[in-house]
Length: 202
Image (cartoon, rainbow, N blue to C red; front, side, top):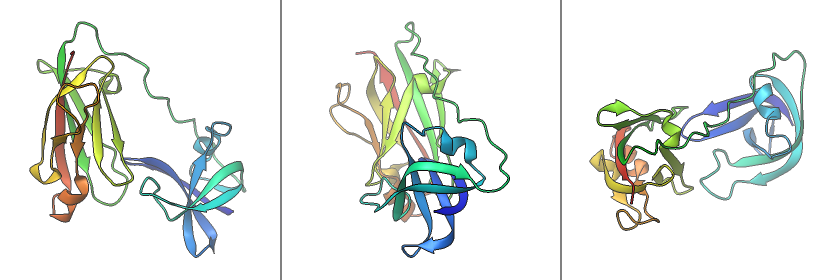
């Protein structure tokens, strides 16, 4: 497969290969990178490339396009300005002195690449890096889950009413997560969503 490699930095991060010639009726396919070549696509983003690997039809909403390729080998075509690999997520842990905090997420649910913007705070002061205190998952059914950092549980859930803020399980239980429905909010015309939850040590 040959084409232009595009990196999408949105609610999900993923790689698109805009094909020189359509394949399986598709002008673009999603590229999946394994552990062996986890950085090879990252350094080639923005370049024309040739990729090899098995094709498949996307079975769930976890995929961003209808057809994907599990990349086994990739190489640049022509001149390519190599990029630096994407940074790994911070490995920091929550401050042990913190007993509770607030997580606010701004979600732009319009088409295109719009990363979730996080603000995590305690007593009005920002906690950084936010990745030490919060995490999220967008499911194949487009349910957005928010999770607390290590050693904390979800206490309260709040946000744009049309996104149906709720608990996944009993509040303050180990299996609980903040749960939101951005698809329903967008269908009702609300695409700028302010969502959040609080976290406490059990």
